[in-house]
Length: 73
Image 1 (tube, rainbow, N blue to C red):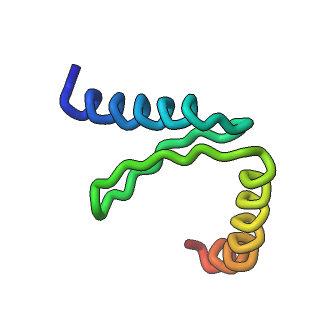
Image 2 (cartoon, rainbow, N blue to C red):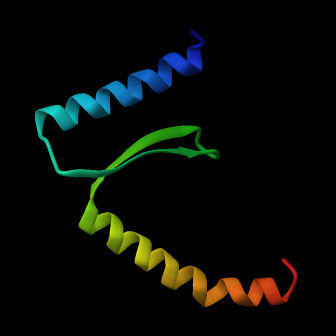
């Protein structure tokens, strides 16, 4: 395996170990990569929190997205 694959495997394994030690009713499991800092993190969330986050993001995006479409961006 490559060094990058080994690193990502380690991040996922560490997250799964934490979830096994302190389980939650898991709904979302996602990897995030910040290209500026080259950081990788894991999001593990329950349905209620995930749904709330999606609705919040959608409200924000719909406030600005149509304007950008009209402007051809």
